[in-house]
Each structure stands twice: as C-alpha cells, then as structure tokens.
Image (cartoon, rainbow, N blue to C red):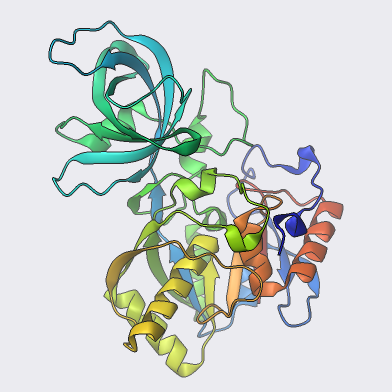
Amino acid sequence: MLVSDFHFDLPDDLIAQQPPAVRGSSRMLQMDRGTGEFADRQFSDLPEILRPGDLLVLNDSRVLPARLFATRAGLTTQHNSPSPSGQVEVLLTQAAVSPEGHNDWNALVRPAKKVQPREVLLFAAADSPGVPVLRATVLAAGEFGERTLRFEPVADFYAAIERIGYLPLPPYIHRDKSEPNTPEDRERYQTVYSQQSGSAAAPTAGLHFTPEILAALEQRGVEIARITLHVGLGTFQPVRVHRTEDIRLHAEPYTLTAATAAAINRAKKEGRRIVAVGTTTTRTLEHIARESERTGEPIAAHSGSTSLFLSPGVEFKLVSGLLTNFHLPQSTLLMLVSAFAGREAVLRAYSFAVERRYRFFSYGDCMLIL
C-alpha cells in the first residue's frame, strides 16, 4: 500500500493545543469493528460500555523531561580548555546499550550539522546558566539529526534531568520558546498511573483516565493490567518512504510482569476481550503474542524490545478492543488503527470526527473501537 492512502484533510484549528479543562471530560467516538458504524460518546461513558470480565491493558511508562538545552564546549582533546559557544537543543529518545556500563543515550539534536562526534555538550539549569549540571560527549552521528551521547557520571542522573529538562511536547503543540512547558503541561502530559520513567513522549490514549474512572471500571468488573513500553525515537520521525512495505520502526524497550502475563493468559483461555489502551500497548501485546507463537511457550514475564509495524492485512493475535487518540495523517499510528478496524472504515470515522469538530492528536479526544 502507499503511505498516501492514509491521508486525510485536517483543519489546523482542530489540533488541540491544550488538554481539556477537566481530565476525563474528552469526547469519544465509539466504533463497531465489525460493522464500521460509529457514534458520539463521552470518555466518562467507558465504564458502562466495557463488559465485566474485559481485560483493560495500560502502558504505565512515564515521560522523561527529556528536552534539554546545551552549550557547545568544543572537541575533546588532551589539552582541551574551550569556551562554551552556541545553544543546542537535545531530545533524549532512548537509553543506548553500553556493554561497559556507560550512561549512553540516543538523541535528536538541533542544529545537527554543528554537533559532530567528539564534541562536548554542557547542560545547565535555566536559573544557573553558567553552572553545568551534566556534561556529555557525542559518540556517533546518524541520519536526520540522530546522535549518541555519553554522559559523565553524576550522583543521580534522573534527578538532574528532572531539574534541567522539559517535557518533550509534540511539535504540533505550540508553546512560547521562553516557556517550553506550562505548569499544566507538567501534570497533564503524564497519565495518572504512570510509574516507570523512560518515555520520550506520552502514551496519549491514557491521558483521559482519572482515578475515579479507573475505580469505576474495577467496580464494573473490568480487570486492569499494566505493561511498560518506553516510547522512543520513532514517534518523532515522519514517514520518509512511499510504500508501507518499506517502513521500518525503531525498536522500543518493554517490560511484561508476571501478574500481567498471567492476566493475559487467563483472558485468552477464557475467551474474554483484551482491550488495549493506545497504540503502544497494542504493539507490545501483539509482539508478545507473536513471540509466544514462535517459541510455542505460554506468555511469561520478561523484558525485551519491539519494532513491530502493524498495517492493514495483519492478523491481531491478542487485542480485540482499542482505545486510541486521533492520529496524524499518513502516520504509522493511523496505519495501525486502520489495520485493526479497516482503512476505509477508519477514514470514514476520521471524516466524521472532523465534521463534528473532535479535537485531534495528543491533547485531543479519543476513539474506542470494539
């Protein structure tokens, strides 16, 4: 298929710039996966829509304040004593494998051409610009601004990131350059159940949940389980090929606990619906199912990584329901939703959503497909 087969026209004013005034008050377009029919609902209706016995699976990854600003300190040499020059924007996308145990990270850097291997970057807090909190050396350069950085050891790296970093809001959410995050962003661009730090972007389908809605679901008899998949570089990279067959996703790390593995096996054995919250959860569950089929072993606790790309024509092994936000035209996320519910049906639903002025993307409304 062609990437252009997943295009739709979206007015700019439907791209949500702020979260809804009250978390959980979003609109929800409910779609029947079998018939393609859809209807207007509210997200708060979810507990009455799901059935007792449904297994609802959440991604509990927490977004790192991974958008950093650095000054260039020059190249590393034996006698290096450079003076800092030039601000660089750095987006940490994923921890890199280092057999020696170094604190290496994959990142997107801008402006990229000026930041080459062996260069040193200094990271300071906004309130103390002359006092570096972190120091990193560029190890390698990739395409499209990708860089690998090695951070020098500090007492608590993640505490330092929390101090100096900003949440990496998607580029279609516009903020004043002097204030990359608002106080509201700090709260609302995290799910209420986030626990495991490591994502470069929020699993946005989960942003709608409140503790009260989660409690209502459990009271309804819906079983809730959690996986962790840390969203990485792929979410920031546009599709640069013309055919879906040529798309290759970056691998992203995930963790499946023993409790969630057991819940999935029980639901599968008993024929209960497994409803994934978000495309990240869907990809993880479908990857896990395929690995279980490949090995012939039951699903069990483990950690791994997935680069699974789901597009129309694939068979879904585990997921029978999907809660998801509205996605970018020609994106791999829209392709995944189309794989689950049919391209033509999904594009009809998107056209309906545009007509009814649903809010789109990360801070927007959502869609439930059952």
